[in-house]
Length: 207
Image (cartoon, rainbow, N blue to C red; front, side, top):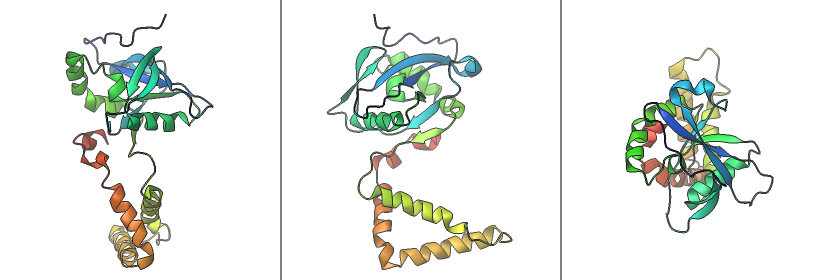
């Protein structure tokens, strides 16, 4: 028999649920996951080395996708489904905190209690994974441009101070912004920064 979809959390502890994402060699096979519970104050006793928190947008709630969660059918948004598929491509078992799944959204008292733990949940994670959505609208070009900007200091003189490095980077940006050949890059970056994730009120705390 499948285990319960959601076991009650111990509210006397700072207990949370962690999503366990099973690996699969078949790209389009159904996502299979379990939930395990962990105490934020005793993570050293948890059955995993670390977990990663996820920052994303729920996306359109129409046309949801089905996954297996604790042996039950569970429906999630397409955007979250795309994210989990991408994470599963690592081909290793992953441990994640994902609000839409790890919190029983039908349990109002639990939702309130878990929201109060949000800061600790993100601080205790190994890292926060930001999901802006699948690749489209030249987003690969935008990501390459950001790499190019951050790599602009690679040829800097080791003796340069912070101000000199700042001037070097600004000069590089001004040159690129006025170069017609780079117009598509900057348009791609503008579209990336207009994605819904940037408009969420929680992103500052999560990141």
